Length: 91
Image (cartoon, rainbow, N blue to C red; front, side, top):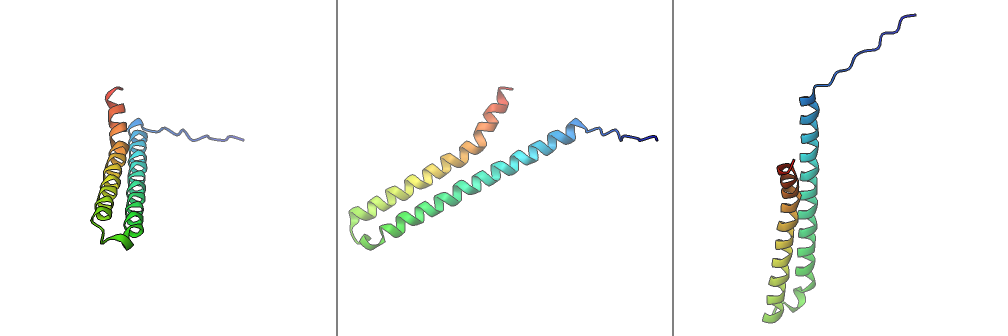
């Protein structure tokens, strides 16, 4: 009995484009996750400090805390995209 095995040939460009698409998807999911966690933390800080919102010092602390959260979210989301770019520069 003769069995023919199909010759499967993958084009290197096709594989590379699929890998790039997958990595972009992973980066997008990580960025979305970081932003979601940042939104939840910022809302938690605001809700936690809401009862004492009349105090100017407490209001200042809320603004500082939310500002830190926004800054950390920006840094975290940027790292997800900058690290692979820097890695590709040295290859």
